[in-house]
Image (cartoon, rainbow, N blue to C red; front, top):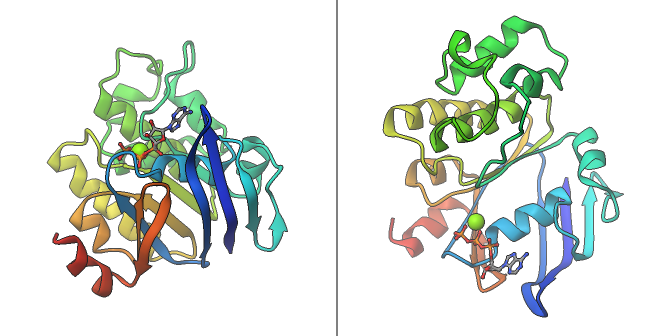
Length: 220
Ligand SMILES: Nc1ncnc2c1ncn2[C@@H]1O[C@H](COP(=O)(O)OP(=O)(O)OP(=O)(O)O)[C@@H](O)[C@H]1O
Ligand SMILES: [Mg+2]
């Protein structure tokens, strides 16, 4: 479904991703894990077209290597940042409206990520929002679109336990759908949802396989 071949990313003359080959299959739930600096976020950004990489990326056999983020989004890819960006002058409703859905749906989406619609729908997405609130809005923006592939970079980071329970429900819903889900995570509960776990180390895939096979190696 989403296939990468010899994917390399170079920054400041340093090879950050050292030639990665992998195929994400339709409808499967993948968790990418590994130490800080292993290259997880870089890989996610290359998949989404946020970083310019060498190698090839195919989405349903279409070569998307040279396609922009916008084009990849139109083809059904969604991405939630590890560190969400703020948008001066843009309100939550404006962000969600990109998906062209009825208001009721936006309210439901906000409730799903544990935010009260009446409190947040018309708030500006700026740095008066807490880190956890921004993370939840980031997730809401992906959930508001009919995506085929969702890429989530450490969605649990900065999320309190209560919200994390909500978050688990969101990901369970993804798991039970046709969508292909790629989540970067260190969380045992997220890993427990995985059909496959990918362990990265020093810009490469160290190992990957079914969670039954990989989890014992991680000592979680
Ligand atoms: N644009 C860039 N310029 C310079 N170095 C970069 C750039 N992007 C990534 N790196 C470096 O590449 C390495 C991998 O970074 P990346 O963010 O992909 O790691 P990660 O596995 O997501 O780590 P974490 O678990 O801390 O989020 C790091 O050493 C980082 O400093
Ligand atoms: Mg990262």
